[in-house]
Length: 82
Image (cartoon, rainbow, N blue to C red):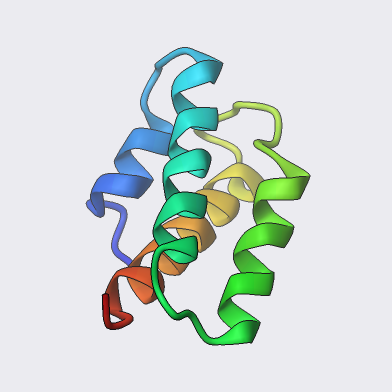
């Protein structure tokens, strides 16, 4: 599991506009689609993207868990061969 200092986690928990968080999900989608991803990872990324960003509450345990999950998916996608 990525640390809270992971750049994706930081971007998702920063007090930015909702558009910035949506943009991050779009970047994740482009990343996973640009690599020959394992099917399970690609499906999971698309499930997260289809669900969208939950209500922004950077101190809420549910939101923080979601942000860590997205950061973990990002790390897994980056680890795939380009």
